[in-house]
Length: 163
Image (cartoon, rainbow, N blue to C red; front, top):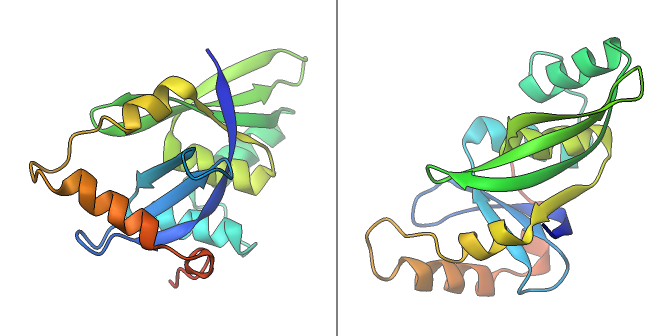
């Protein structure tokens, strides 16, 4: 399995659904992964991007605190699959005794955790391929609308997500 290192390019709002989209990118247009997320997940990711100090009540901050209190550290995250229309991920952790442990997670939580821990985000190439084949909402224009949305984005559109 080959993995591609990606970064969070920003968060935009899907004009059709009003839902936030977290844009992961490898710096090349053909290597991007849009992830539709809920408002709470978008808020957590945007807060981490802006380096806003969040409380431990957010689930990714809770996970970070628990891992660190047990002597472990997050070493990276990987988006590894697609299940029921949602991306799945693993959080790579080095335990206190030096073991490597992979903890299953929702992709949006893993991305927020990666930003909080300042570690790399990887996406399986297979996931990128599957993301291009995702069915739309039944609207045959859905892939075209997504392509138009992504092509219309300007660099300044990223990172201007307001809470």
